[in-house]
Image 1 (tube, protein in one colour):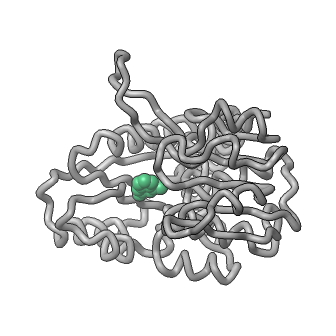
Image 2 (cartoon, rainbow, N blue to C red):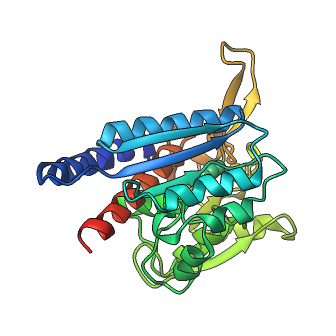
Length: 291
Ligand code: GUN
């Protein structure tokens, strides 16, 4: 069965839009998200545009700040500080990757934790790890909600996460092992040095793949009836009008035959990641206006 991220995301967007309408009807301003995009990376431009469109759809204000590739680290940090001090802004994201001369770590740590709707700040990650209330980074948050909306049982199950990035794999593994629902899983984290990967993937009741290698996981690596979450979205050259097709980290056609539930690419995890961002921005707004 397909886990239709796009459909679920649209449903949640409608719910958020209703909440925003109710907020604005009380005379309070709408939530406001600022995105900073440095340089001309094609995929980043698309992601940021989709985030802006999602803001429009739910009734948020959004501002896109586009800075040239040659922006210095200091200039970017100054801009972040300005936004940190601007009361009319609830959340800020700096789209990654950044040009090589700018430290991603310095940038993510410069964003005030109260506006860290990407959940990349050490404070956000620390709180997540300790099971405290915080901004959960968008992709893991979106996946959790997809599992939740489809009522997929996670308690006591074996969840295997392939990939240990700070953005997806690591926080995902923490969320799936935490006390809560979805959660309460036994979690195994696999990565590039894992030996006999297939032995682990075959044991997974829930398999979450975030490696960025097209069709890395094939059907013969999947346990019968497993839930397969494909985080990959790689542009692969193709002879069509766009010049590329989007491929997941899972070989869909073979995995679909074995899996109980599976996310398609596109239309699976991707749309859900934007939901996480919208919800974090709303949460930040609520913290400001509802205490
Ligand atoms: N680049 C890839 N994913 C993300 C994300 O979730 N947030 C930001 N800021 N940059 C990204």
